[in-house]
Amino acid sequence: MKRDRTKKLAVTGVSSTAIERSTTRSITNIAIEAVLSAVTDAGISLNEVDGYVGCPDAPNPTAAHADGFDEISCRFMVAALGLQNASWYQDVEGMATGMVVAAAHALAAGTCKYIVGVRALYNPRDRRYSATDAAHVAGPQQFKIPYGLGAAGGRFALWMQRYMHDHGATREELFEVARNARENAQRNPLAVWNGSPELTLEQYLSSRFIYEPMCLYDADMPVSGAVAFVMTTADRALHAPHAAYLSSFAVNDARRLFEGAEILPKDVQVAQLYDGFSLMVWDWLERLGFCAPGEAHTFTQNGRISRNGPLPLNTFGGALGEGRLHGAGHVREAALQAMGRAEQRQIEGVQHSLVQVGVPERSWMLIFAPRSA
Amino acid sequence: MSGCGTIFSYCVMHLSLVAGFAPPYVVADVELQEQRGLRITTNILNCAIQDVRIGMEVTVTFEDREAGVTLPQFEPAQP
Image (cartoon, rainbow over the protein chains, first blue to last red):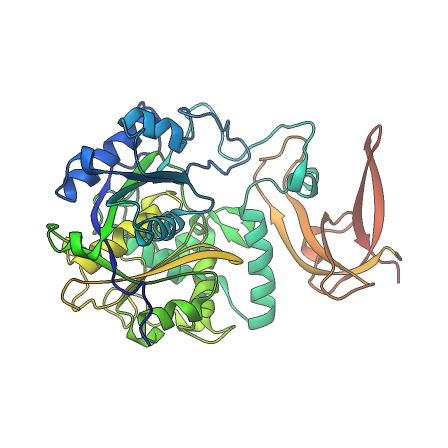
């Protein structure tokens, strides 16, 4: 039986600012540009927007958590955009796909007509990302910082070491995720890696370790930039210049995602899986059922995840190739692929465009379908 | 608590991100002998980095960082 939510909602506008390693712009300036561009892309005007969803957290240990400096709260943005009378606005925990899930609920409740969502990241120029000199820490950090485990990467390096031990996976196999990201970034003018030469296995294996066994190329790069989207109901989407219909969404439970769209993993034509660290792709290929547990390291070989392979993965270069937008780039690309607007990155015949963003135990997943499907 | 466990996983930190730590150093998840799945994130001391292995038996050692702060860390178990 089809679920109520099936294809009742759509993303009708997407946008991205420039994605820069270092910027002279403020996060406010970046975020507002993204919102206004997304609204224009959706063919509406800002005064038709009556809902806002944000995802403001700057999660690295160095973050100042200052509104308007390295984060932008919904209160801040709603005031800046003049949307104080919006029917609904909220900041959500988690990542970019979580914004879409929250907006879907608000639209399904019938309180909003057009919701704009934005994810903006700001990489301060005068600080080293994730470095900390805190003399005292509290909360969950008290069990990590005193052992020199500051940035998120260490946790994933621990996961990788165990995965390699349990399944016989190798760094040579993980290279394919980074290589694929570098290759696909050449078709994405926004990507930090756009214009960089092909990544070779030799370069990868000889690069410096960050959190051994993870090397430089296994971690995405901190950037400043923003992605925004406009979501609306299916009846309004009929009149939009373009639309990516939300055929399913789920939190944590991949089985529900496929049930919602009434498809199987093999029916997906293109997938954007979160790659803040390369090995996260392995984890979610398994959790989503694209392959069996412990098999992702072999599944990803032999061109299977290349744009010409059976499961084109991270067709925009991923976070590894584009920059650390915490999955917002993944959502933008998934919507563009379903709209048929991914230009030189477009995969032919997309009927189911999947995006997953999150960490192993917390993840938000979407499947978009084109208007014709 | 016996203070005994085995290394469930480990990584070698090569970046100086946390003040007071000189890389390279080992961060590990140690599974405590008392209960399967009960793990503590910690450092492995008194062991050459290249000798650290998953499954290695370790015992607790305590470091006094400052007044009121004592940190449990682990080192290879004596045979």
